[in-house]
Length: 350
Ligand code: SF4
Ligand code: SF4
Image (cartoon, rainbow, N blue to C red; front, side):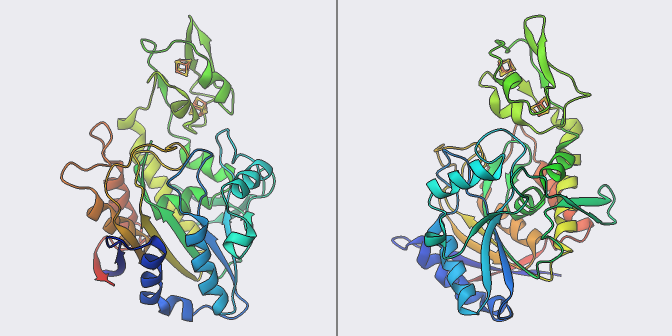
């Protein structure tokens, strides 16, 4: 069955706020169903320190106002990440958020790090999926009735394409849940390229990398597959075995998203196709944009939404392909198989 995708294209000379306003009028039915007094979580990421492409506070603030008009109690939230940097604990994370303008004044509501100061608020919820039998999530998952997911469409160092599925699967898992999803990604060092600069050794959160014969060496028994060393290496010396692990990684993400969303009654997903970079907002900085801005998409079907965005953005040469690999195609197929949503859709242009 085809799912509806609402699409507000960014017209020449139009502001992004106007583009969002048009979209919100088209999906008014979702907001009308939000009950007075309901706590509504708005999931999004602020990106890393140097990221410039993330969804901005003014756009999130428009959605906050819309929810407040319904008498709801919205809050914007994210979780801590598993790699080092400004979002590994809530203190640094909040400091970064405020510096990037995600303040209560600008948003119109609090910005909350859902998994506590050190990312240890990790509740286990049983699910019955093929690979994932339990999810580890902040304790508010399972209590929230309403969820709005705001995702910035980008490429991604592992899955190739990042949209709502990744935002929910990784971004709504606790740090332990993130590690479980990553855990089959075991990179290897290409010693020909390694200069032993030691950046990866310093960055590895579990000390899985050591010097061996004047090169870095990864102990695959210790490695948790977080991918931090891949972004740390400036010499292209950390390689992923794409053929072995990537499909399992995207399957885990699809199952995690399924498990998390099964705990929420009402949810809607908005994908922002602006400032699309090859890397996600954790890494991209002010990287060049890989395609033109398109607009904003929304749906109650997370799979249909990501698939529609991908189809509209990929272009003739598939801009999201990495080394010829297209793990996201497997993710779409697998997500459909497990009932996360429908890969078929109809676009309603607003
Ligand atoms: S970051 Fe790259 S070059 Fe530096 S030690 Fe690690 S693998 Fe070698
Ligand atoms: S060696 Fe493994 S655990 Fe360490 S940074 Fe790389 S992927 Fe993460």
